[in-house]
Image (cartoon, rainbow, N blue to C red; front, side, top):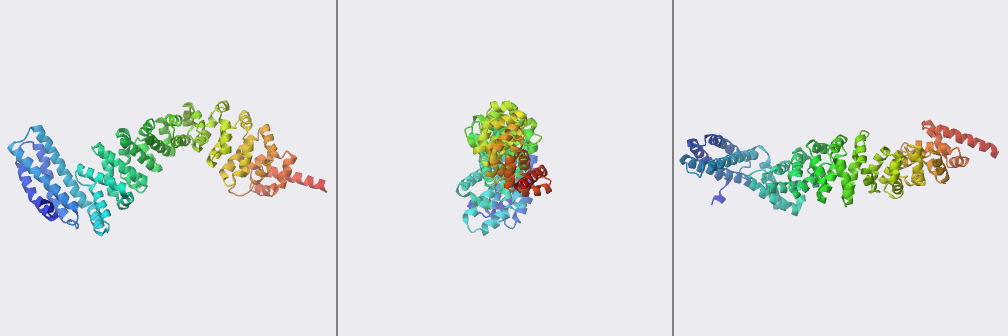
Length: 545
């Protein structure tokens, strides 16, 4: 019969009990400090009940009725304890003190939940949406999500279980009906006293993060600090889900900065040292995302990210994990102010680890950032040059560009240029000038590398021998603003113009027309080369007459 009572009837019953509970509480002589707090909370209930009863959706939603039932039960407990204390019929003072503290907490919860129903839009949102919602499943989901926000911990735990089950069946529908207040409630459950609840809450958060629909809500509801705490002290599943959540959220530079600010680097690095491959991959990817932010790089270095990433390169078997580690090392060594980190990677033995990962694009990129800080003898002993040549021959476009950039950075001395030239890369670089027609960055890097290497006589002779070198370089004189390789092509052709054969080839492939435009644009070397070709052309014209 009690279950069939309406919300209005529960309201009337609760309002009747308030004065009774207050009267009995005021007569109690024992535990005065505790009863004083309880009385102050009992005195607030009538105004909350009055506010609740005037809500336009008061009688239209089960949440109101359940809340009033909870208030009525708590008031009955208050009357019961007041009578026991007045008669001093209880099982020990400590037990009664504990019971009164629990009662005080229940009154707090009732006041808080009533306030939530009144002050927030939750009751209106749930009622209006469930009334208008033609699909019963959606109505149930809206109410289920609302239950995460009110009631005692056990009730929220049941709601969380229901949500997890619902997400297995139809995650998309949940994402459609989810509100920011629902997200806030789930985030708050990450700090619940129950480890099981924390684990379930982070499982939901992980799904929401991966969906990509709620990232702004999650971050604005301060999800980052509890996720980092779970990395430190959660169960193995909790750590895994927290790491995956941070991996996804760290894709935003702003959020990556928040992770750093809340001390997230150290626990992410610690997970990289574990044997859980899923958590390792998520943590390594999160660190890779964070390393994109220049301001975060020194902090990563201070916390030991270099050692952790090198360890992953050496010990992990998964290519994805190795790639995250290499990308992280590439990022932290890419800036003009990252010299200390570059030295750290070299000193920690990062070069051999990266060389072993070639021709992976990120490993080549990281290596390119480091080779300029290592003696050429060391690079030769590690077999770096033939590996870079292999990348130029067989790697992806991005890997080829990084490999060619590495060749440029290595070639800073006559000895280095000699070693690079003898590695067999010059014919490949010449070929790349044409093969990379659709990739201006790779073409420019190849032209720059050739121009650097040709300053050594034996390399210049090697370029002259290649029948494709002049035609390919002349094509790069194109004055188009998108062609950044023209200045390097001009430089190379100036060095080749001492050869009559090369000059003839340049003229026959239309170099003069290009050079006239480049001279007007003040491209270095263009005017000098034009004068040589025009002088040679006029002389040959005289002889032909």
